[in-house]
Length: 260
Length: 324
Image (tube, rainbow over all chains, first blue to last red; front, top):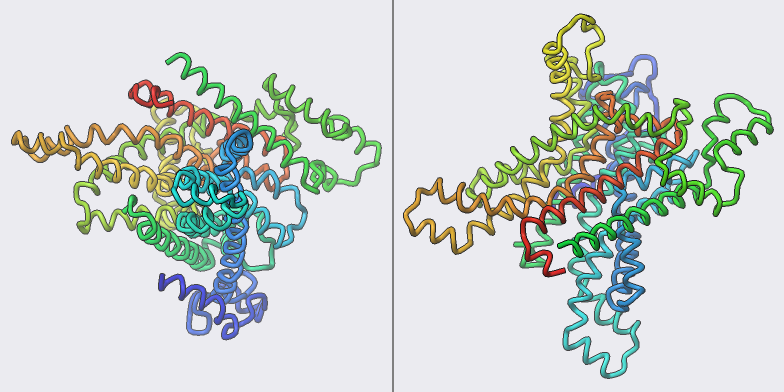
C-alpha cells in the first residue's frame, strides 16, 4: 500500500524536479551514459535521461491503467448486474458472448483491433483496454447477484414494489462493491503488464511518449552497451505490478474471509 | 455420461463460434485498412488495389465477407499471408513443432516443479519458506516476460556466453552432425526460453496447489492417518498430497491462456521459430490473415483446454456429472 502511494506521488511530483524526458541535451557526447551523479539511471541512445523517462512512464502507465480499469469495471458491473438480476434469455445471451470473448486471450483481442490503427490516439487506446477487460468481472458480479437475489432484503424490496432499476442500483450494486474493488485492483496490475507488452510490440502507446514497454523496445538494440536503459523500466513494471497485486490480495482477504 | 459429454461439447462448439464471430467483427470494424501494409510498400494504381481487394474479398459487403470467412473456416482455410504469400495453415503447420516443444517443456516444468513447490508451501504454511516462495511466485506474476527474456538473453547468452540466446538451431552446426548432437543443440537453445516462460506461468500452479494442499491437510483422513501413527512424510505425501493433486486438473484450463500469451513475447525475444514469434512478426508487418489465424488457434486452444479439463474432471469424479 505504501509502495503504491509512493509510486503515485513520485509519478505526480517528480516530473517537476527532473529534466525533460523528451529533451536530447547532448546528442554528441551524452549518449548511452552509464548511471552516475548527473543521470542516476544513465542516458539512452538519444542522450535522454532514463530516470525522468521512467518516472514520466509511471505517470502514463498508471493513468492508462486506472482509466482503463474504471471503464472495464463499470461495464463488467453493468453486464453482471443485468445478467444476474434479469436472468432468463438476457442472461443466457450475455453469458454466451462473455464465454466467447473469454476464449480469446486478451492480448489477441487487442492485437486484432490495435494493429489496424496507423496512429493510435491515447484515449482510444485506453477505451480499447477498458472495453476488452470486463468479461471476467461481469462473470464475478453475476455470481454475486445470483446469491444476493435470494437475500430477504431484496425480496422485501421486491414485495414493496420497488422498480427493478432501483433494486439493482440501491440494493445489489452496493453489496457487490467488495469483490468489484478487488477485481479493479488486480485489473490495474493486468493492464500495466498488457500496456507494456503492447507498447513493446510497437502497437501500444507510440513514441516519443515515454512508456515502460516502449523504453524496453527502444533499448533492445543497445542492450549490450547500455543495459540500464532496459533494466530500470523493467524494474518499474515489476515493482508497480507487485505492489498492486499484493494490495489486491490483502484487499481480497479483508473483503472475503473465505479466501483468507 | 454420454448426455453430459454431448452437452459439454456443444457448449464448447458454441463458445468457439461466438469467439470467431467476435474476432471477425473486431477486425472489420476498425478504421484501418487490412491492405494498408501492401499499399505502403510501393505506390499502386487504383486498378491494382481493386484487384487486391477482390482477391481478399474486401470489395464485397460485410455480410458476404462474413459468409466467406465462415465457409473458409469450415474448410480449414484461414486465408493467405500478406507477408509470406503462403496459406496461413501451411505457416501454422511449419511453426507448430517448435511451439509444441517449448509449450510442452513449460507444461512439464509447471506441473512438476510448480506442484511440488506449492505443496511444500502448504506443509510449511506461514513459515519463512512459504513466505519467500509466495513472494517469488507473486513476483513471477508481475514480471513482463519480454523484459525477463531480454535480460536473460543479455546476461546468460551474450555477457557470460553460457547458452545460445537466439533461435532453435545453431546455424554453424555441421550438416553431418548426428541425432544426438542435434538434440543437444536444440535442448541448449530451449533452456532460456523455457525458463523465462516458466517463471511467468509457474505462479498460477504454485498458488493453486498451495490452496488445494492446505485444504487437503485439514481433511479428517489426514488426521486419521496421523492417528494411526504413520510417519509424517507418509501422511503428507501419500495421503494429503495425492488427493490435493485432483483440483490441480482444473488449473490446466486457466494455465493455457497464460502460456499462449506469454509465448508471443518469449518466442519473439529469443527468436524461437514457433507460432508466437510468427504472431509477433505479423503484428509489426500488419499481416492480418496471420494475426487472425493465430487468434483463432489461441481461442481453439483455450476452448479445447477447458473442454479437456472438464471431461477429465468428470471422468475422475462422477459427482461433477450429476451436479450438472
